[in-house]
Structures are given as C-alpha cells and as structure tokens.
Length: 486
Image (cartoon, rainbow, N blue to C red; front, side, top):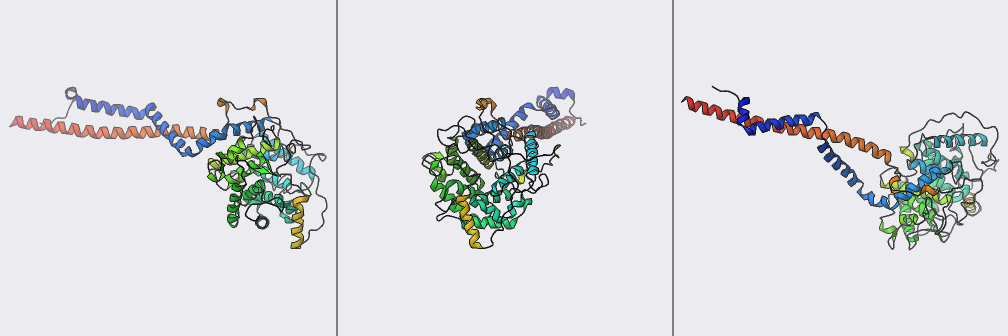
C-alpha cells in the first residue's frame, strides 16, 4: 500500500530534511529585512549611480571646493540688494545652485526690497538709459520663481518692449534683454526677441565673434552673445563661428582677456557660454591650452572664499559673483540640468503682500524715467544710435578693465570674504545634497524590495526541487513495496 514520507522518514533522509530547512529559511528571509542582500543591492545601485556620473566625478573634484566656498561666502556676506554688485547676480548664483530654496527667507526679504524699490520708483523703467537694470532684475526674479510682470503693480518686462530703449545701451543691452525675456516663456515679446537676434547676427565680426564696439572680437562679449543666441536655430552657424573664435582668443595659460588684460570675468563668461551650448570647458580639446582648460583658468583666480579680478589680486565683488554663477552653469551642465538662464525648471512662488509701503523715494535707487524724445523710425538713425551707444553709454554689466572698478562702485554692498569661508573636507556643501538624500532613500527602499524578490524566487526554486525529490523517493518506496508483495 502507498504511504507518504512521514516525520520518521525525514530523520533517515538527510537530503529531504535539508531541503525542508532551506524552505523554512527562505520563508524567514521574506519576512524580515535582509541586511546582507540589502547591503549588496545598495552597493550595486550606488555604483550604478556612480557609473552614471563617472564622467563628472573627476571634473567636479577640480572645482567643487571652490564652488562650495564661493557660495558660502556669498551667503555669509551682506544680504542682497538691488544692484549690479551684491544684488541680482548674487541672487542668481544662490538660487540656480540650489544653495537656498526659492521660498527661503533670503529671497523673500530680497523680493520685499524690490517691491519697495518699484513702488518708490513709480515706473517699470528702472533707468532712463540702461535697459540692463531691468534685464538684470528680471533674470534674478525669474530665478527665484517670481513673476517680473507683477512687482508692486508694475510689469518690469514692459520697458524691454521698446527696442529703441533696449539698444540704447548697445550690444550689451540687446544681449541681456534677450536673455531676460527668454528666462520665462510667459514673458512673450517674440517680436522684440526676433529683433534682438537679428541685430546680434548683423553685428557679428568678420571671422566670427562679437565686440562691444566696432573693433575686433572680444572674448567676454562673444561669450555673452553666444549665451543669448543659444536657443535660436537661425543663429547656429554664428554660434559655431563664435565658439571657434573663443578658442582662438584663449591665452596660452587657458585664460581669456578683456582689453588686453587677463580677467576672471572673461573666463566666467566663456564658461557660461560653453556650458549653455553643451561644450565641456574642462575636457574639450579646443579649450585646453598647454594642459590648462578654460575651467582651470577660472579656478586659478580663486583667493580664499572669493575670486580676483586679475591675477595676484584680492577678492573682488564682481569677479566673485560672476565666477559663482559661472561655476553654477558648469555644474548644471555636468549634472544634465537646464542651462543657467533657462528657468523652465523653477516653480512659481506666490509673493506675500508687503506689510508696509514706502513713503519716500530711496536716495540711492533708480529714479523715475524722464520724458524722452520720440525715437526715429529711420533705419539709418537706428544704426547710428546703436553705434553711438557702444562708446557713449558704457554697460553696467560689462566686465571692468580696471582692477578697482568693481570694488569701488558707489552705493553698493561691499564683499568681504569671511576668513572662515575656506572649505574643509568635512564641511563641503554640495548643491546636490538634497537630491542625494532623496536618492539614498529610494536606494534603501529599492534594496529591500529587490532582496525580498530574490528570496521569494529562491523559495520557489527550493520548493520545486523539494517536491520532485520527495516525489521521486515516494515512487521508489512504492516500487519496493510492490516488489515485496510479489
């Protein structure tokens, strides 16, 4: 008669007994966290991330400490105010790097100051001649999620709708107006942007590149023009010629010059431009001279928490802020984020109504726009006005040619690097820290799920094996019993 294997039989069949124990162990594995398998899974998943960023790891080590230090120094200095130094460029660097979230008190306080400024000014036009005042502010506000079209009841983009006003400041005004209007697709003004593009293309120098005046191509202006034209397909050929010109203008030590003088600001603008059009300023052979890359050249100006304007100089406010957002542009390029001036990844922040309204106009703020003569509609007059602007109206945001030009600007917060701003190995800020923490949580969760799936598969396999082994032994016993009956 057929009988199944019982408990006593298990004692005599060590193989079957071992299989049953393995089955029980597999069930235990499914019920509790598996530290061993989880650790292995965590290791492989982390290495997968490291492999994905392998192309950036070595590059980041070249500049990460300086990038971290300059952001800390900016955050530790005076709170941002409206201005070309200590204001919008500082905000841009701290916002686009992710050092502060857009809802931070730093940016909320800055926005409250801007609202007071706009209300006191009484006009959306912040300066009668310099459109870059509006453009710079639009860029900063866009970077912190504020709508530049609604600031204390004023649309700060409105003045840029007057192309004659935009080009009063020459090429510099056109470049930054185009960048500002492209920060947020909702700003519109496609006709003005088209005019800006056309004017920039018409001002291309022979052999490629751009100049602030009518002379030979200059590195910083060429770089800024490339940055502004980057989103436009019609400018592709001009951009390519501009990139070639930048390579030709690069000095033997990898740096770039302005007015015949090597400056960090020129290096910064080139780094922004190359990062915007997807060229690695540290690895592309076109921008490595005698073993020194364009990134190396900028980092050479670092002087403990800040950047110098010229070699062997001290920390300079303008140079520091430009280097900060340039390193930010490069870091965003390496990590696959949107370009520095592409604010499509910034979530809108609803501003809080200020509790107090200004009663008088600040003495060091822009004044209301005076009445201007009606611009000429003659193309010849427009061209003449633009040419004159290149030399008669120096740009607020142009790179200075004097070492003290940026540090002595009146009515601007000075930048004094904190002596403690030097970065220590165990205190380095990474703009990707929050993302890394979220990634770590996902890795832990994924590791446990993966471990349980492996354990469940093992149980199934063991169970199947045990079934066939027991079935085979039962058949053997049944065969033996039949033989005994014969």
